[in-house]
Image (tube, rainbow, N blue to C red; front, side, top):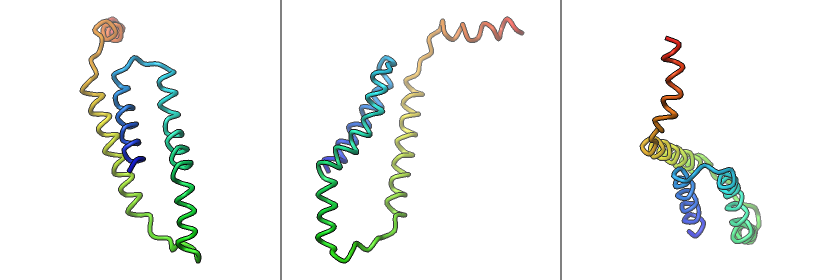
Length: 110
């Protein structure tokens, strides 16, 4: 459960970054975070899980269907993306001067 909650915390940090000043450094850190999560899991728990499965099933592990786990994963990702879009849409407040700069050429063209 440590990695579930670590991943949830990372997802919350990613969503909260919508409210920070746009920075290449912050974006790079957030993009590298997923790699850090994967490597952290592998070196702290993944290797021991692989060894356990090898010892518990000496004749090989009987593979089961990936349908349910993938369905849960895609469903969770979809809910996360929808939540991010809703939060970003609700939090977006256009700057009046930027909006006027975009609209002015259209008005003058007409």
